[in-house]
Length: 564
Image (tube, rainbow, N blue to C red; front, side, top):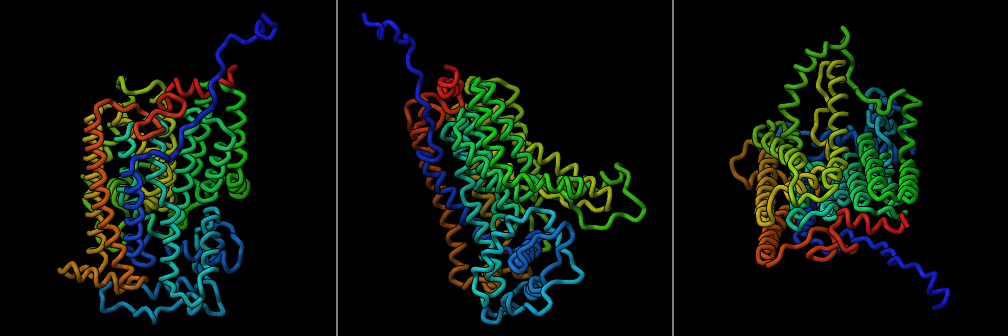
């Protein structure tokens, strides 16, 4: 026997690091849901009249201010652009009927509405409370658009950019659910819960910095899911850091998302005992994230707070007592928070939809998650509850921050400003994935498939109903003929008649296609003889690491080289 053979290491070689793909092999219906989400946002982009979304004219004005001056003033120091104020007046109307719409060739451009005096001397644009990244992107788009483009069409192009940014969200939710060990029905439920949320689609079809925040935060949360499944590679840390940098340069609600990513790294380091590689990866992600995170350090130094906010004047007699403020606040919160989270904000002047269906949906979602965390089930993997808690962190912290800040504003001003469910969308794929995973733990496989049908069918019905009510409430509201509503919408639309009609035909066709592919997925799963394995990888799902994604076995396999 030679010395080489005598000294040979008797232990088996450590397994190679292999990671499951993010998107390959996802159910086809997930891709169809992505298409439906885009179609829904495009329909909303013309259903909502120009500037008829929360603070939309201020977002546009901030973009034009950047394009004109290439600077970002301090909080409450940026004046409104007069061209945007004039364009806002030009598209305003008490009732939007087909007869009072201006013809497209007569609609002015921002250049037509620009005078020697560019900015208002009285009206302040509070958007400088946010970082400038979103407005820099829109300002660049403004520079590219021909100057003779009608103002309403240019605003629609900005809306189209939001649609493009938001388009991958259902795909990201599905990838996150699979990475955390979700079965095929659970993966579809996560995608459908994201794609078929009318409130999310309605804000996605408008000009709002929430869209860049939501998209970037969703990529970061997907990265956190990768980390929880043991991925401590530097390239993963780099793209997570880039996503966080974009989110942090969009809005303050990105901070809870960054904390969730940090928590994901901490949990994975403890799980795998890969201390060195985990700390290096977390450090890389954090350093890259500071490309956007420096803004909040700057705010602390300049203003003594992370987020300067508020434009209303404080009450002359001082703040309200907490009890009085809560009375005002809770009335507004109960009345609008749940409906606007699920159904979106209707700025047409009509009342918000009835509260009880959306309150019931919220209660059911919370109960499903709580029961799944409390009650151990055979299908819940080891460490699955901790994964869910990490994914819930940004949603919970954002909600707590929102409640705290808006109650303080109510005490100071007497008005409950900022009570909007849309502010939770920065954590939307974390929440929809958590609910989907919780259903998967509580339900047997065949019940999961039925749940997939129920969630998708309910979401399709909600999407169709909300699109219909938005049209009839916003356009020729006094009319009794459905086509009269659409004639008014098409007359006011920034797009030609054929393009406007195509948006709704695309939405209707996408709803039908998703319904067909959901039934197909159901039949394929019901026809399967064996119980498919959870996780990522092929259509039936074992991960490339040879174990369910996010499972202890996979984490040990991935981390093994670091412990040798």
